[in-house]
Image (cartoon, rainbow, N blue to C red; front, side):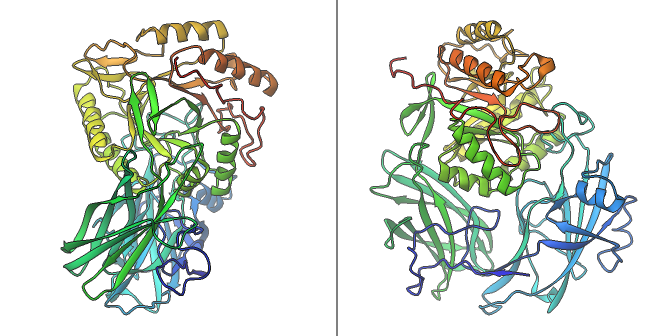
Length: 612
């Protein structure tokens, strides 16, 4: 096991690099810690449990695992390897797999009274249970079973169960349950084929051990900017085992500086447990983040106890403001047209996703819509650095029930809490094309839930624009749209039909334009009072659909359709899509290398006069 030593602190003995410089983040999270960590990636013992006997027979106490599987990796790959099949292998209804490995304790530079060992899964699921030396662990959120597969979760390892040599046992289970967040993975409702993909679940991201302080700041930071006054509201989360008086010290650095631009200390009386706290800094002279100038700063946050002991985290952030005002979108109080592209990473590696992001920028895009999927959190860091705006979506369930809404809400809250420091993330979708909300037009409970989550997001995370249900069936209540954007998915291969659809859409026709009416609920009369986006168009890779057969013909069709869009009072458009994935062959680049199949700049709009 390789031990890493990120060196990030206020210490005068720090090497020549500036305190505010950008450190390489090798872990799939947004925050850095000045500690030791040990990756547990690699070969694990492995066994399938098709009859679900492992819990009854107590495999976590002792079991002969006859297989080997590499972590990270999907259950589908491990299932195929175990059966000697080609990769990946599908499964029916339910799959259960067990993983086990041994590890030695990482080096601890602090006494046990101040430190502990934390185990973190970058993502794993959908249902994960973990045992240490045969003892069931509970997550920091006090879960025996962690549900979800798109975000990280952690365990504090109990000192009484730790040995010099330790055994870690993990049980992962998933089903085709349509009530859990699935995105575009197949389920009992939507079977694989067409736009529905092979499942990809299980041990899908890195797992690591690290030494952390007993009383510390958690690896989540929220950032809301008041750009007119250069005020930044930071939300931090404290994790306390020893109640008492503490101070939080915040310092913001330019990435090339050694002295902070701004700093402050805040006294706090903290009880045991977890608590979120909002703190404000005035960062005079800070430049704003935008695609044209993706200026970032470093936050160093410290929790200091009454003895002066310091626990520290670091995060990069940017100051920016996004608004939907009238029929336009404004970034930092200047109107911006969103030249977007739909992106479905599928099973792409982090290195492949990096190449995709660079290629999408080369295409002329200033926005990437990450479609119904969870991605490696380092992609958000990369978008911050490149100046690419991101539209993020909650992986949707496939059926509309009270339980599916409960699962949807839990997934949304997990996702947003972990990526709310990134200036690149500007739009969130709650649902897409009614997936998981099929009764949105007929069920008042479904509409009420979506309205409640819209209002929650606007209050808790004002740094985002929120879309209730992208594509059609937006909710209106008492004539007020419960979405910051009015979005439509328009698909036609015919240029004349395309112009006709755009004529009708921009004129405010809400029915007969997209596949279903654009608005449901109380009557809503569009008078250009909200920005209008064509949030999906294209589909030209489907030759049977009428799309052009060659890349050159497709590029010319895209150019003509894009040219037509510019003639209308539309705030942005999103081409479908960046890469090919399974049967969806609409990609504009090589999925492995990111090499473009069409000319660079194809999706960049010509600037419009401000008077339009």
